[in-house]
Amino acid sequence: MHSVTVELETVSTMELVNALSTIATELAQREAPESAAACLELTETLVAACDMQESALAGFIGRVDATGEQARWGYPSVQAWLRSRLGMRDNRAKERLTLARQRHRLPEVCAQLASGDLPYGYATTITDSVARLDDTDCAEAETTLLGFIDQGFSAGKVAAFGRRIRDLIAERDDTEDTPDEDTKRGYDKSWLTTTRSLDGGRYVKGWLNPEDAAIWDGTLAPLAKPAGPDDHRDLPERTAAALSSVLSGGHKASKVTVICNLETLTGGNAPARLTDGTPIPAAQARRIALTAGVSPLLLGRGNTPLYLGYRERFASTAQRQVLETLYSSCAVRGCEVPGTLCEVDHVHGWALGRSPTDIDQLTLTCGWHNRFKHTNPDQIQITKDRDGRYVYRLLPPADARGPAIGVGPPGSIDLPDNPTLDWAA
View 1 (cartoon, rainbow, N blue to C red):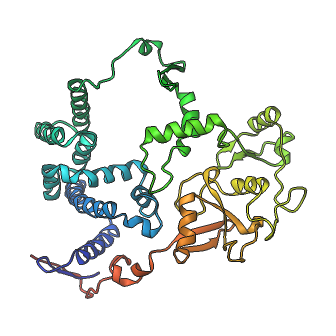
View 2: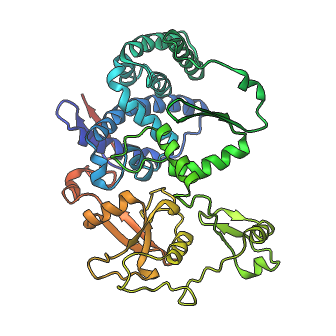
């Protein structure tokens, strides 16, 4: 048990966060009270406190986003940092980043969130609703949506009002989507129409049923991710580029590698798997083999040369096939770029003469982390997992290591051993 004494007028933000971390650690280790009524009241109080902390968190994230600090720590984007370093799901990372980026346009929302008068769920609902509005419409929408909250509407209803506001603005500006006969086709079958423009381009529109949409997402979504911090294309532009890459054969996105043993192919029941670990029933693996043929993948020196030494700078096609089988994603821990989109990396640096082009000296890293590794070698810790695959872990910048940065474990500030909690206002 620790005693925490905080002089609010003189304490630093770092000391406040450390004190809060210490309190949270103690609270997490305690059993819930026996009284259900007390638990209900404590839950409401704790959630309100957490919502106010989200206000401070938005300020921290906003500063990191504005300065690009996450890149120094080895993360290509703020969203990647929130996902990998803090373990946030993608939707929560987007939600917090949107709030951080919209704070300056929503003064009343931020003031009410910081004071505890507005729950976090309502705040993020409003920020999502106004993210695509200009400053004038944003200010009016903020007032309107806060009014709906005052009337007692749920967050879901407020979100619906936000969508309606966007529709009305689109109608006012004559930018709304006009329903046409295509909407009458139904949702069971996919369809696609193209119209050639006068300059030789094409307008494309259509609908994909759930099955075809899954194929679309599995093929194009990985290719449509930002190429790095300097990629300023929006999602529609990246999606179009991904589609063109697949149609032109510039990327082997249509290749499917199924990993299985010989027993499976000859009638056994052991499941196969895709390179990302997805299990494939034995019968389905045999059907794929019958329609696509079987290419042996030799993990040794056999008929396929996997050890090229220093004579060859670039990995061979056979080596890449092996690496894509071993690495479902970038070797950097927490990076989600699929292995099929990664670059082959010489683990210890081919140019330095320490890493030959041998299969056991190679791994896969995304383009951003490949460049980061070779420009910041002291920020990459290289280990191997129990299966012999390389694992890269990101380290803080040299000037941000040690206790000075204040990111140590909870309770890292000096606290006397006394079971009391004093708050000095």
